[in-house]
Length: 146
Image (cartoon, rainbow, N blue to C red; front, side, top):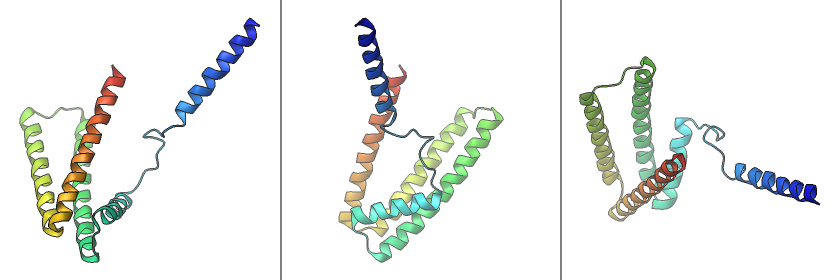
């Protein structure tokens, strides 16, 4: 009887562990998309959420492509720096942060010129919602590590 109970508990434990593993693919398991695929997916999402017309779609597509190219350059530069093993000085970090803030402001201004007032308002709300989600995920990860 004791062995049967232990075997049943072991089976339940393994089954519940297997279910947890299948819930959400990890970062490595997810399919890697090219920058063009990511841009296209984002454009489709924005088109659906903001009801963009054909002209706006073309402009937003160009903006996404430009932003993606700049981000790729920055990512490569950062990767090179990581591989060299040197940490950037505080001034360089501050300059990088300022550059990123300027890029964000420039992209925001471009989107404002492309979108109508109500679309822009909705886009800003969606951005805030995404930021809040990311903050929650970061908190969860931080709590999971502790």
